[in-house]
Amino acid sequence: MGSTRVLEVDYDVLSLVVKLLNYSSIVSFNEDVGKIKEWIKKQPHFPEVMADKKIKNFLILNKGSVEKSKEKIENYYTIRSQLPEIFDNIHPKLSYMETLKASIYLVPLPKLTKELYRVFFYKVRAPHLTENFEPVHVIRLLLNIQEIRMTEDVTYGDVFILDGINTPFRCIRKVTPMLVYKTLIAIYKQVFSNRLKAVYIINAPPYAEKIFSLLKGVLKPKLIERIHFCENPYILTEKFGKETLPADYGGREKSLGELQEMLYQKFKEREDYFTQLDKLRINDDLKPQRLTNDEIFGVSGNFKKLDID
Image (cartoon, rainbow, N blue to C red; front, side, top):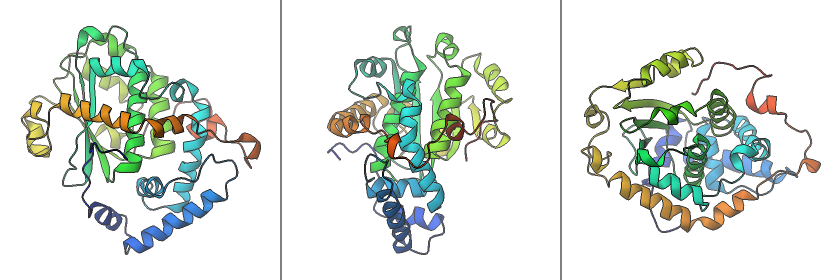
């Protein structure tokens, strides 16, 4: 797994999450993990037998549902061929990732919240380096972080803190509805099922709330309620405490820059793992029934309202 510890997960976190999923014990949870693993072994088109830790996270993300976990694992392998514009050229060792590292911060904070949520920070680091900003690069970075999490993390939900202080409008203008749709629906809903608990936006640029008003037309009310514009950044201390927050924001954790260096060091340590991921493609010739784009995206050519549990 590498020696750099990007995510801090105490020994008892899995037990606490399992209880929240209404399992009677770790034993019964592991029995379900075993059922899924046996099912995976019987899928001739799968490129590998998935590691137990990753299966556990699929089961957690799908609230203990064995059948939903199977469906999402199927999608996990299938979507890599269905969305080459995202999954091709995704390896963190590629040169554009270094450019991205110099221009933005996108890091998970090491400590979980008391609710067992993982907090992410996003901030433009160097506005002058965003002239060639490509949103798909950010999506790929986020997916690479997700891959680390699937083997090294245990949580009960995600929180995003977005600092808009240095964000040029040209960056936002490049974020197309289709890219947002593919990310939220095709990947995070149909594959990973991440539970987005809240989004806190601080130092929002003048145009941010106007964009949010437009997004209300495609976002479910439940998701809209979880997006908060914070006029005072110090509200973060009240929400998360100094132990969780980075030093840049009055916390006792390492700075965003230090956390980012640790993240990219983790990518280097697990380079072989990401090289292996690049090769993960299903064998369509052995697949009993081929999934269509519509089945993965959950639509038939039309947008539905975007929703994340």
